[in-house]
Image (cartoon, rainbow over all chains, first blue to last red; front, side, top):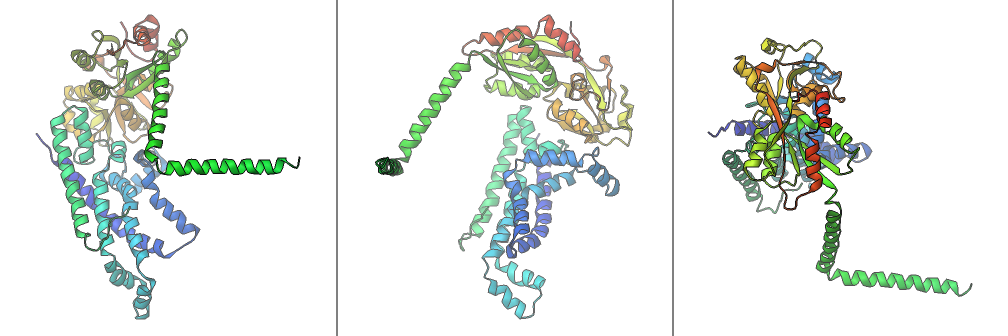
Length: 224
Length: 283
């Protein structure tokens, strides 16, 4: 019997991650695109680190830092009531770290490519910085915004290593589609593994197809 | 003396031109260059493989044996210099890999059924042999939790996460599941269970305190790496079917005598003493 729960969980995780990252990434990308200097470079490097670090590094530190045995983990559990290992919130935090560059990079590239005269004109017409960003700059980079959102969604769906390390494989809470496939292969239950994997292949194709199709006319291609 | 300087200069120019020439030629023959490089790499690899084939064996080891195997290796190396490389995983994972042609010489499992499967697939030289019997423990590093062999403790609301190895691929996990079902609390605690993919990951969940308590192998908790961390208790041996751990010598295209020697050593009196030292039961 095929259990579709891992897919709902994966969808939920991907949507929550994308939403949270979208909110964080816009101010971050705006800040990165208009500053220069050492501090900016340090932040930029930190944002890009998940691209090169293996997920096991992130998983390892999350496990050590956030386990209730550690000082930080105990503090959070006592004061916030959250436990970041073996929980959906933990996976959300991990995938936010892990997908951060996929959200920030396209937005940052889009903002940097806009001519500075655009925001200067908006300022001289009396718009505040925030109004300029939301009403003028963001609408001009909507293709990059779409790219960022779709890539983050897709990347979270494809996440495996971090979830394997801190998830604990709890059905309905941390058993995502990629983990379910791994489990079925190890069991070995190739029939189910095949069905799960096929669903993921089709989903990924669909997601990326939508992205490329909607970006086809303007010659905008996703950058990462 | 005066002639040396122009000579050196002309030599330098000659070398420079030569390099330039190579670069120019290679620019148009990338494929030839790659082919040549590939040839050299392959040649080196084949020499290397040929040289070590006779002295090196690879052993697939169930995670509960990961510390024990190091002690066995050290003891074995007193008399035999064969290089032994160890691959650790859950018994189910390793069996899967062997069935798909993983290049292991010996499979040391945590049960008898996974080696049996290898034998049924005609991948074993001889039927699996039991080398030791495993002991299941309940372990916690939390100061306020004192593990006891009766399962009532697990129902306590203060315990939110119980670590267990994946019952499908790890024999210690299936033994733990058996106990929970025997005490009729499996359904009640199912929501608290966090599953490690092998006994190693399960132990790591417990040792870091990420899980409040959990089921693992005695050989893990009394190893040097984990000694003195938290409190553990042996579970009643009548509560779960005996964990008969077996090993099997895997059939190779060319039999490796070094592998057969180490396989025999696993059942020697010397090895049995080490198993006992690590908390296993031996006949």
